[in-house]
Length: 167
Image (cartoon, rainbow, N blue to C red):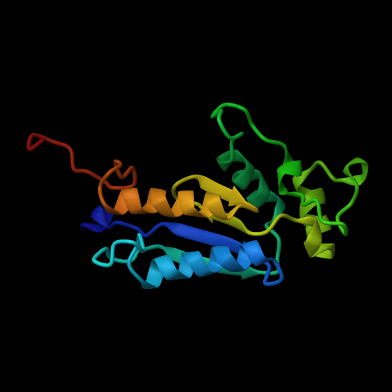
């Protein structure tokens, strides 16, 4: 009867490559936020609550890449969409710019064959519509947004508020 008032936990995924130092740091940061006080400089703060999905050594699917790209914007501007090349690394084993794929299917296929071609980690807050690609600072931003939601500093869009005469 009251199932519409149930609050769901945010779903956060990390596409993780254990050979990437940035990916290892990001995963440790996410796990720490779940198990210890967050932020860490406030020992009385509770841990964050979210469902963490760790996808190890597997790139996002083409559909996931499309969604993730829609969550990203160019730093400093909220309107400029990025291209799929955002997901590609500058690693020596990655293809040259002229040989890089420009479609989600091409990028997913390339990354499945050559893990070094993708920027790691790819971290996504599916409920909040936020993502970070190859950037630990972006992971901190996602965690901060989750903290603000937990602490009531931002309106929780997922909460179903009853409507009627009592409001």
